[in-house]
Image 1 (tube, rainbow, N blue to C red):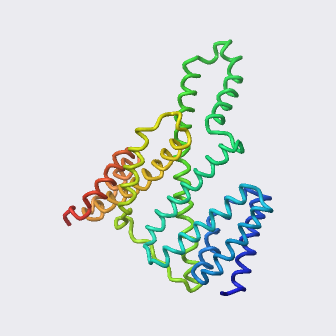
Image 2 (cartoon, one colour):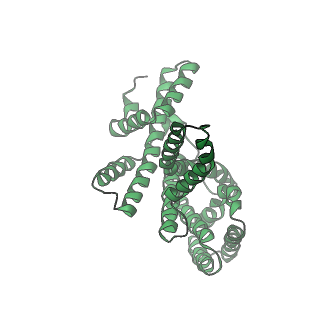
Image 3 (cartoon, rainbow, N blue to C red):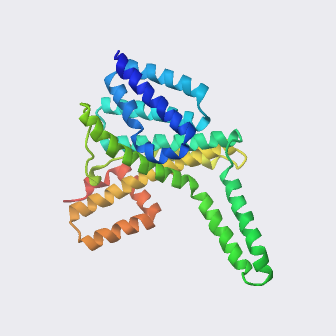
Length: 301
């Protein structure tokens, strides 16, 4: 075991925990770099990684608040995941899918846990407060007929729709964080003498078919749940959001492959991608079809 590397990485992770405890806002700057020390130590010295993880988690439990602890645990688990995938020589896009799935589920699970422990308000409470503040502001204007009840109803409807999009936004942010982290960390790991893969072109990306199976299972489970099954319904719904996004990426990959093979004009390419994002359910359906019957192999060159 390389004791020096273990001590140095332990000190770095504890410093990260301290910064998250004192200045949580720094997560916006540090997040893309957090994978580096954990993945590096895992690839160089597994026993050192396990020892470091035990030390850092123990001290974090004692010294830091819940947010800092969650960041530390999430970083160590993500580092372990990417380290294992590097060992298995997985493709970089596979790492992107795996890391996105992990960060999405971990973030959503952490939020649900804090809400169950009454450490964080639910999204319903957040948006209820916004509605109450809005109604307080418009009451006087309503009496003067400066604002109509139709406008108020429109605002409430828009807010309800926004509330439904919160899990999807979290998944999107997890995807962007995963992408940026891999783009930053992989070249740094290569400079540290660790073999890392390159991103293949988008049209070659392929989501593991397991994602489709899990998605179908999640949808079927959700059909038999009632609104009273709050925790399980929340878990299944959030898992569905994550998998829908991953299948959407597969649909984008299929469209990219079609564009590459058919050599369509640039303006057509742009319109196709715009349509793909506007009509996300259609793109997800294309992704499902590609996973089921491998549409790319059937497109003639």
